[in-house]
Image (tube, rainbow, N blue to C red; front, side, top):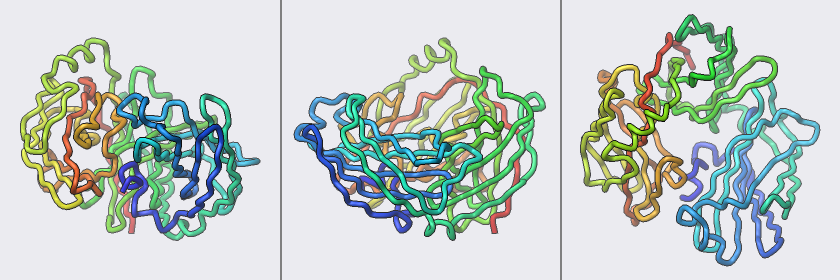
Length: 370
């Protein structure tokens, strides 16, 4: 269940390699559990053990700030780095998941050797030499190329070179006719014909002028996907002051609480129903607003009660969720469904303190997947 909470989902467990190798150094025991890879990503899961490892850490022991994983592939210069997330298993053990991404025009071979380094306080304590295969995942990969051009903002043109979806995630490779101004944040809003929304995860670029956006993996039964680019202004100090003045800023609420969350000129989120199942929690809400980033991703965050922290960084949030329109005829209606929750634990939720800046939506591209 811990793997599922931080993104190691059932959807690609069948494509992973079990490693099960341990190394010990300076009182630590590092156990490399699993690896999964597709053309563009490598995901590594490692357990770290040391007596009292999590007792003195910040953020309720959830973040191992002095431990870092890094991957290297000999003779392959396309890794750009990605994200690393850690979770406390108990006072002595944490789980770390590292996701490394390639640059937009680089692809991992079907079989390759990799070195994984474990650094503690910037000193390498362990090194693993691994043989990795991504052959099993190839048959579950869908690619659509040369999809056309979209526009957003002041005649900003985006050429969609490729949409690729695997059991790990979805990749949009694109190029633009000009640089996005540093005063604007660019992203994609992705949804399918079933009303499901696929949140943005990260973005990268290379020296060839190509860009790559990473989003959640598309569900297998989706027949069509819709891609809409958008531009958002970054928050100002005035925006930050407004956010701090909201009565729900930095607060959590019990699952018995339904209420309206007023973001001022950005709109309003009304949490009107919460359903607690055996292993799922569904939070239903409506959104009212114009040109807002509030409806571009999931504004609801779920935590185990007693583990919630200031949700500005969301370090302890349950990240295994689905976002969709429960009523496809009502585009302002949403559901955030959190998966694999523990029925023996109590949970609370919060609403993200999004920027109050407006967004500009571009044209929408329809892609047939079948």
